[in-house]
Amino acid sequence: MGKIRVALAEDNVLLREGVSRLVSANEEFELVGTASDLPQLLALVREQLPDVVITDIRMPDVDGLDFRRVLKHRFPALPVVLMTGLPLSEEDMVPRNVEVLQKPFTTDALLRAVLVKLFDDRQLAVDETVIGYVSLRIERSFAAAQAVVARLDDEAMRHKRPLTRAFAAEILRATEA
View: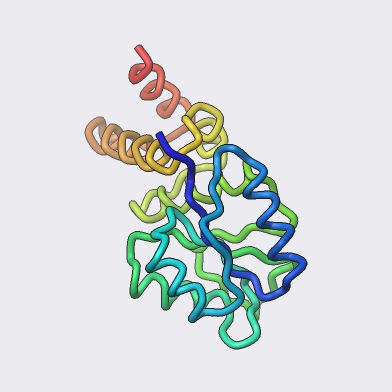
């Protein structure tokens, strides 16, 4: 399966270059492009069709939450992960279903954020232990992340069981057999 294709929106040139290097240096991710504002990001997403967008929560013209709203309106299935280097305040009003990474972050944290977003898009609130367990056991691709989230959701619904780490382990072991 292919790499997780990432588009990055960050107005600060040094941070954009740093996050770009982090993503590009990891063989599990492919940076498809960067943008410093919303028009550039929209063009990039239309052209490259990334698997996930990472955007700074605070941008000069439009903040990351507004970026996210515009992207979700135009590209409803596209996961959008916000990042920030500052502690979040009550003023930020980040909705519960929005994944936020603290800068600097690792590519493992990015994969976990993608998984959280995929689970959330299916309206599944899962414990961090499930995210951690799954992130260590899947192939590092967006297709694999989507497939495992769909499989776990389907099995939890079929068995009418909550999605716990133990149940995830049971399902993934059965899949491997």
